[in-house]
Image 1 (spheres, rainbow, N blue to C red):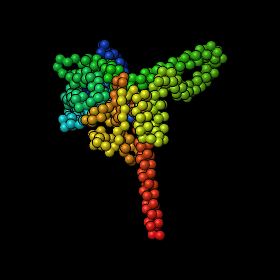
Image 2 (image 1 turned 120 degrees about the vertical axis):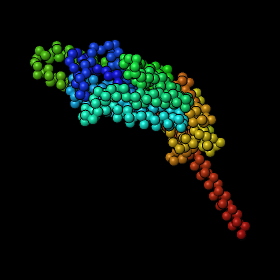
Image 3 (image 1 turned 30 degrees about the vertical axis):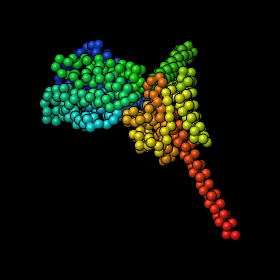
Image 4 (image 1 turned 135 degrees about the horizontal axis):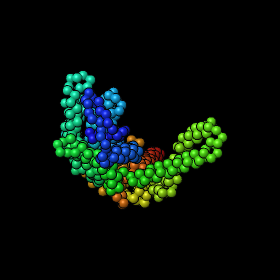
Length: 469
C-alpha cells in the first residue's frame, strides 16, 4: 500500500509540494517500478476474472474486493499525482487512506467464510476491525495537519508512512488465513490454502515495508508475485474454474482480432478509395463505421462466445445440458426406486462425481449436521466441513416448495478440484426435480391409502345394511 508507484509519469526535476512539505520529486524508476506496475495491472485483471466467474459466490466477491482495494490504494497514492496540484494530492491521499485498510480487513472477512467458526477466529476478526480504526485515523493525519495546522506536517506524514496499525492489520489477515486453513476441509481447504499462499508474500511485504533495514522495493516485487501466485493457485489448487478462464481468454482474443481486422480493412478502404474523394466523405464514413462497430461489438461477442463454447467446450456443455434435461424430467418418473437409480446414474455420467446418493429425510441421518444445515440454510454445503458422516464433497438440499425431503450428496470429482458454479446450479436443479417427484409419489401413496380406507368404510356400511335386513 505504501510503496507508491508512479503510474502516471516519471518525474524529472523540480520539487513536489505535498501536504505542506517540500519533497524532492520522484527520481528515475528502477526495475521494481515495472514489477509493481505489471503486478497491479495483472491483479486488476485477476480481480475482474474472479468477480466475473464467481459473482454468485460470497467468497469470490470478497477476494475480488481484496484485490481491487490493493490496486486502488496503491494507484491513488498522492505521489502519483504530483503534477496535479495540492487539491488533487489531498483528494488522492484521502481516498488511499480510506481504501488502504480495507484490503487486510476484507481478506480476514474472506478467510472467515471458510471452515468452522471458532472463538479464536472471532477474536482475530474483531481485532481486525479494532485495528482498522486507528489505521484510518493515522492515514488521515497528514490531511488534518495540512488543513488545520493542529499537527506538525512532518510528524503526521512520518506517522502515516509507518502506520503500525496497518502493519498489524496485515499480520492479523495472514493469521486469519492460517486459522481458516486449519478449520477447513476438502475443497474449501484447498481454496483457502492456495489463496493464502498466493497472498502471503504481499501481506508480509506490506506489513514490514518501512521497518529499519527493509527496502521499499520488496513491496513492488511482491505485488507482481501476487497475481502469479493466484494464477498458479488457479491451476494447482483450483481456486477458480480454469475452463472458464480459458473460455473468457479465448473469447477476448478472438473478438479483439476480429475488431482489429475490421478496423485495418476499413482504414485501407479509406486510404485507397475515399480519401482521394475528399475530407468530408472520409469523416462521415469514419463516424459511421465507429458507430456500426460499437453497436455490433455485443453481437460479435455473443456469436464468438457461442462458437467457442460449441467447438472447444462441447463435452462440458453437453454434460450440463444432460443434467438440466434430467432435472426437468425427474418429476414425471412414477417409481421411486427408478427415480433414485436414474439420478445416481445421470450424475455419475455427466458431472465427474466419483459417487452420488439420495439421502431421504426422516431416517437415521435426519439429525446429521449436514442434513440440519441443509434444512436450515436451503443452500449447498460441504459435508466434511460440518463433520457429517456423508461421504461426499457436495450436499444439496432437496426442497419441493417448503417441504424438505432429503439431500443429494455428490462425491469428489474424479479429476480433482471443486464443482464449478454452473455444475452446482445444474445439480441443484436435479435435487429440486427429485424432491418434487418424491413429493408427488408420496402424495399418490397417501391418496391410494385414503381410497382404500374409504372403500373399506363403504364396505363396512354395506355389511351393516345387509345385516340389518
